[in-house]
Structures are given as C-alpha cells and as structure tokens.
Amino acid sequence: MKFQNKKVLVRVDFNVPLDKAYNITDDTRIQAALPTIKTLLQNNNAIILASHLGRPMKNLKADGSIDTAKFTLKHLQSHLSKELDLEVQFAEDTIGDDAKTKSEYLKPGEVLLLENTRFNEGEKKGDLEFAKQLSLLADVYVNDAFGTAHRAHGSTATVAQFFEKEEKSFGLLMQDEIKNASKVLNASDKPFTAIVGGAKVSDKIMLIDELLKKVNHLIIGGGMAYTFLKAQGGKIGKSLFEEDKVELAKNLLKQAAEKGVEIHLPKDSIIADKFDKDASFKVAPSMEIEDGWMGLDIGPEAKNDFASVIENSKTILWNGPMGVFEMENFASGTRAMAHAVAYATAQGAFSLIGGGDSVAAINQTGLQEQVSYVSTGGGAMLEFLEGKELPGIAAINQ
Ligand code: AMP
Image (cartoon, rainbow, N blue to C red):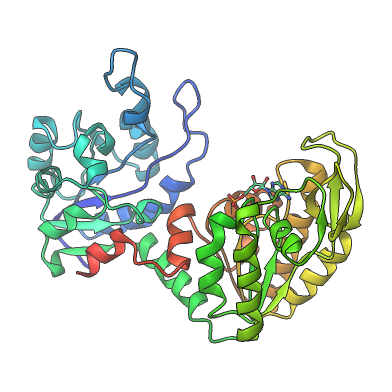
C-alpha cells in the first residue's frame, strides 16, 4: 500500500448496522478501515471509497424500485467526516456522472464516498462493464473489505483486473486478517487446538475437514456436538440433530483417529425442556439425555475438560459458541471457553477468534482484548479457514 500522490479507489466494508433513524449502532467496521484511509491520506493520495450497505436488491420497494432512502451510503457521510476530521464528499451514484465528475476534481488529501455499490445490478454479478467504469475513477485500487472477500463481486474482485499488479494492493485490515489467519493455519507452535461450535454440522463440515489435517485437538461443542454424540450411540433427546450427517460425523471421527487428532466432545450438558430463555434446566450426561429434553450448553465437567485442553495449547482457533449463548442460562459454557482462551493467550499462546457467530460470542464476554486476534470477517474468515482461495484475495494477487 505504498501509493503516493495517486487517486486511490478503496473498497471498504462499511456494511454497518443502522437504527430506524439511520444512526450507526455499531461502527466497528468503519473503525477497522480507518488505518488504511488515514495512511493513504498521509501519503498525499486522493481517496474514493466504495462499499455496499445492506441488501437493497433483496428489499425493493412495492413498485420494484431501490429503496435509496434506506440503503444510501449518505447515512455514513457525517460520521466518517468526524472520524477523519475532514469534510468527506459524497457522490450520488457509484459509476455515473456525479461519481465521475467528483472523482475527476478530487484533490490529494480529499475523500469521496461513492453511493452503495449494490444499487448497481453489475455489482453482485461481478459484471465486467460495471467494474471497468469503476476502475476508470482512479489510478490505483486498494481492497480492504475482508468481510466481502469471499464474494466475486464487481467492486471486490472483477475491478482488480483493470489495474496492473503494481497498481493494486491489500489494505491494512486485509493484510492483518490474512496474516493472522495464515499464522493460525500454519501453526508451528503445538499443541494446536481448534474449538468448533455453533448450530449445525452441515455449516462446519469443510472447516472440520481442513482442521483435521492440522490440529492436535479438536473440541466440538454447541448444537453440532449432538450429531457426533448420536453417531457414537448416544441418546440425545430432542437436542439439535442432523440425521443425514450421522454417517459424515462417523467418518470425521474415524479420520481423526487415523490422523491422531484427539476429539473432545462434551461429557455432560445443560439440558432444557424447551428452547426458551425461561426453560427449566439441569445437568445431564450428554450421552443419556432424557426424551423431551435438549442440550443447550456444555455442562460443568465438559467446561473443565475443554478448559484444561485449551489452557495447555500454544495455538488456538475458535469458531462458534458452545451453547445458546444469547440466553443467559445457556451462556456459561461459551463464557468459560473465552476465559480459557484468554488465560492461554496470557501464557503466550496465539489465539484467533473468527468465522460465523464467534465474534458476537467473545464480545459478549468482554474478553476480546485478551485474545490475539478477533477477525472482522464472518463468512470470509470461515471460507479462508476452510482452505478456499477467496476471490477478493486472488484478484489482488493475480
Ligand atoms: P454459528 O453461526 O454456526 O456459529 O451458530 C451460532 C448459533 O448456534 C447461535 O445462535 C447459538 O444459539 C446456536 N447454538 C449453539 N449451541 C446450540 C445448541 N446446543 N442448540 C441449539 N442451538 C445452538
């Protein structure tokens, strides 16, 4: 990202949550992009920012038109101006006359925010013509939108082909995400423990498959654990269960045994009589859950087992909660894992939290500063960890 005196098109991920009055309720994604923008400004560049916001094409108005009032990036203009301490300009379109004119007159040290990239049909299609028009606004291209790096969209991937190799670069956030995810996957410090949780086995098959090649320990918690427990002959009551994944679970357990990976399943669970925050609950062995009851969190013995594996690890990857952490009565397993990961990190382990819902889970515990790295990319990080080449990364490397 060594550009100087250039007009730089920067693809950021400004897909922030807004309240009904269009105030930003969580600006984490904006904060994550600021170092790249500030560094480019210090180097006397003019900056053209492109991002999507929400899903305008999936939420059209009754007459079939785009709800521009709801999905406009203009909602972010004043907040961004404040954060950058300068007057951010706004273009009423992404590749139209306003964007062209304002880009043309943009001077070093100035910032122009383009309208929502997803107002254009060509964005999600990865359309060549759309990407070409976008590329014509700038001299060079920086991709800092890790959160959308797994999408082959116009502004995240296609646009890069209109820039020579030395005219394009990752932003600082992208560099960080790639560096940390690569560090965990190439873990040289052993033992390497992966903690995988969340609702479904089907969402995590590829991740587990990839991790079995690399880890020493695989801790499986959350709803997905019950399909594995059932595959081992357990009685799981009405816990979350994917019947069509039982054979796969058996196969993954067999593969783990062949590869010498130790699998850790919860010996006990917090079981509840219904999926409700006010449900009755008690501790039970995970292999002997009564009919009519369901496991919604790992139990006290499992918490201890898992914590001692984590606390003796040197590299840790955590993806997915251990239970229904959104409900207070079923959050303690997830919280205990967060404490164990923070403890191991304080002892010198490298820990990465990322993919899916894991970030919400660690943020809820307030321990996000006590782990080595918290990824900003849910789906993108999951795909990276699955060993896939992300289109947004490939496009810069080509
Ligand atoms: P994921 O997005 O795959 O990481 O899944 C996260 C979701 O899994 C959260 O919303 C949790 O509430 C849910 N979850 C975790 N454990 C369980 C469980 N034992 N039963 C049902 N849902 C669960």
